[in-house]
Amino acid sequence: MAKEPTYKGKTEKEFKDMSINDFMSLTTSRQRRCLKRGLPEHHKRLVEKVKKFKLGQVKKIIKTHCRDMVVIPEFLGTTIHVYSGKEFVPVQMTVEKLGHYLGEFVMTRRKVQHSDPGVGATRSSAGAAPKK
Image (tube, rainbow, N blue to C red; front, side):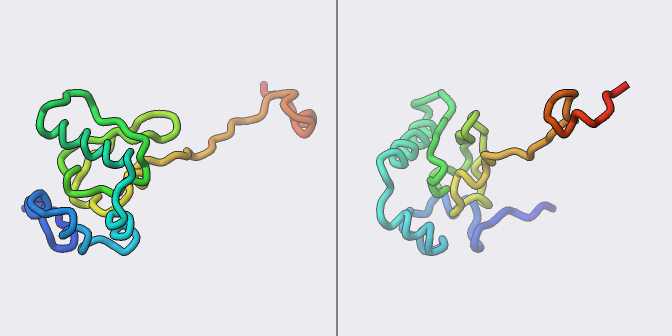
């Protein structure tokens, strides 16, 4: 039997009934300060989009550039597409992601993969024998 995922001992059902002030007491100090100071306008617009999406008023997918938004209980059960600098990457909001930032789940850099240099690519490759 699979164990139900929890965050700080609380289940997803408990978080859906929880207010933002109760949730703030469970988060770390950095996230608590961010929420306590009040959300900027672009974060408030994202929260409104999520509320409308959950009520069924909006059918479009939720896209955002707000990588510094703290994942709050209102986001649970939705998929938010977060911008990586090149494309929007879908992120499924679960209990384990509460209290983290949206940008933590979307990487902005990829591993660099260099191929073999071609003939004449640089002066150092001039001495290398061409491939047969």
